[in-house]
Image 1 (tube, rainbow, N blue to C red):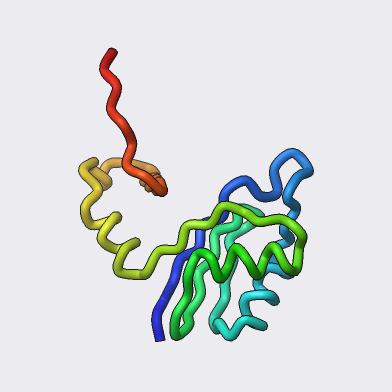
Image 2: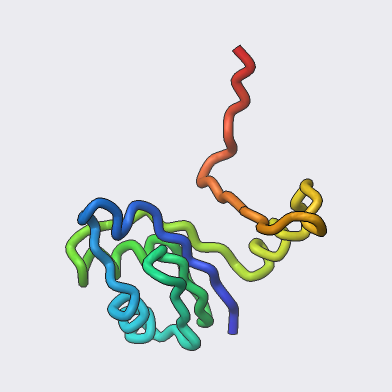
Length: 110
């Protein structure tokens, strides 16, 4: 059983792409995932399953809710590596923020 972190982008903002977390969790359970947990209305989901893909989740949401969200799916190992490789001192910090992008950022020094 694999652990996945699913990050949704552009949902529940400005009255558009409304995706209630309870209904999202129910959809993911219907898809065969277990231990599905959501965080507030953010679209952050923690779940377990045999396999998962971004397209699988996107298409299921589109079928049930009528819109196709942007989704990033990370394995537990991916997420833990990001935390472990954080270059900033977290001991004295109040909060630690991680940002994930679908493509590498471009550095523009102009």
